Amino acid sequence: AFVDKSNRPYRNVRIKHAHVLDDPFDELLPDPEPASPPPERDDRPEADDDIVVEDDATIEEAERATHAAQAKSRAVVLEMIGDIPDADMKPPDTALFVCKLNPNTQDEDLEIIFSR
Image 1 (cartoon, rainbow, N blue to C red):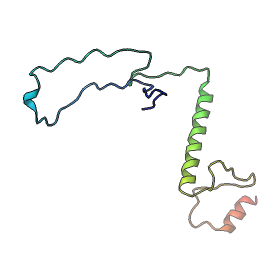
Image 2 (cartoon, helix red, strand yellow):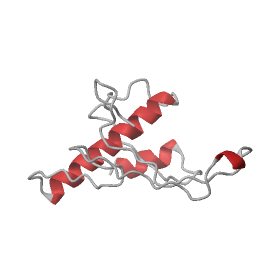
Image 3 (cartoon, rainbow, N blue to C red):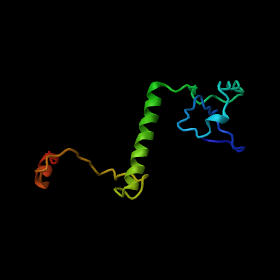
Image 4 (cartoon, rainbow, N blue to C red):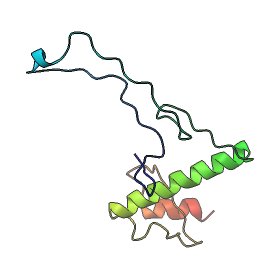
């Protein structure tokens, strides 16, 4: 969980239930289980609360931001596995990426296709 400067979590974390798998000291506990005290409420959200960020972004802007974040994360992964030297690098404007080619495609075939 993320914490603030005083090491308190930004979202409250509550243990709602616990299962005792093996208790070697059965005789030390009273027979009825003690009731849990009610949780103290403060201004922090609970762990299972949905946090809704309200903004004026349109659906297209939100999708664009999501796609940009996904592209950035993919670039970082490619950098980590060594496929590209830098995640922020961009291809030259004269480069064309062609994917899903037939394995039998030769350089001459591509030259014929793209010379038209």
